[in-house]
Length: 293
Image 1: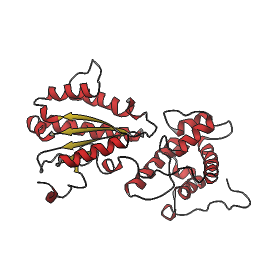
Image 2: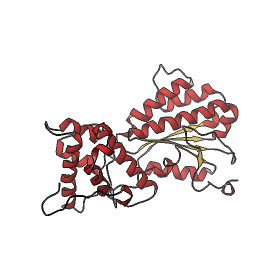
Image 3: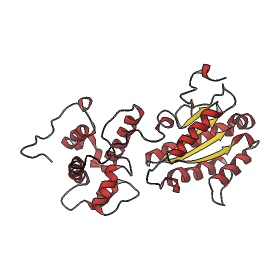
């Protein structure tokens, strides 16, 4: 909080902010303008989006407001525990009478910054989020080279992701696909083996499954090989499956969970309609047509 020796923040355009704390100071000055209804959850979502943007553009900024990040860990120590629902819920539950969650956030933020400044060895920034290269522009990334796919899968596993491998080239019918998903992802016995049921069960896995309980909070990756063969056998289902994956991945991201798919195709020219309102894109090594085939 401002003191007699430290001047308080002054209003400026958001484009003039130098880092996340400068940006937060602008919100502190005029919370009603930034946060509709004074919702701390809106601020949490805003900061998550801010951090994702830093990762996408490889910008070094001391920002770590991701669930399970430095601020969450510090808050858990201070409050004696954390909720799986995120730091906004934790602060709401601990807000004393006479204050608001937003006011309490800024009071705690000042204490956090003070503690961090006294412990320079403490890691406070993780702006390059694991797997962000496969989530920043699309949640479904295509691979033609098996070598590139294998490298990507191994890299994700080294980062702590759970990788589920599915051999889509073995699916000659839609039922084959459903059986493979149900087995690999341990769908319940009542799984209906239809696309609506896949949407529901995959959503449960992506948004609420146990894969994201590691300290790193990494996530789940679906690796689909020879997908062009399934697309040739069941073109409508193949398109819808990717759309379901992308849509469930977007919902997972809102819940601060990471889920995406790496899809291999032997057809270097294969194309899909946009999925989850975003394009299906080739990986960075093969994005140009000349790099495939």
